[in-house]
Structure formats: structure tokens, C-alpha cells
Figure (cartoon, rainbow, N blue to C red):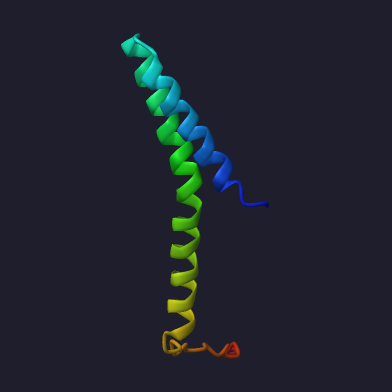
Length: 78
């Protein structure tokens, strides 16, 4: 998937710019909320990806966990 972070940041900036020009408080709140969502989309995936990579690397570097195996015992005939 291509990185669309710059497009999302641009959309956020446009929402903020429009919010500055409106005199209606409800419209301003909606535009700023939308800007926040665009901003989160632009930056959230990078943060999540870094957390995923860090978790993967931590698991790879952890010492192996010893596992016990059970052996199947033959049935005793009566």
C-alpha cells in the first residue's frame, strides 16, 4: 500500500484553513474534528508499525521457552 501520509496531512491542513474562515461554531468543530482524524491517519500508522516491529524484535531476542512433550503411553490390557 502506498504511503499516503502527505496527502492526509494536506487534507488536515485544508480542514484547519477552512475552519479558520467559518463563523459557525458547529461547522468549525466538525472541520477541526475532521482535521484531527486526517492527522491521526497520517501519523497513526507509522506509530503502530513501529510498535509492531518493536514487539516482533523483542520476541525474536527473547530466550527460547523450554517446552515439555508428553509421550503417549500404551494402553494396559486387562
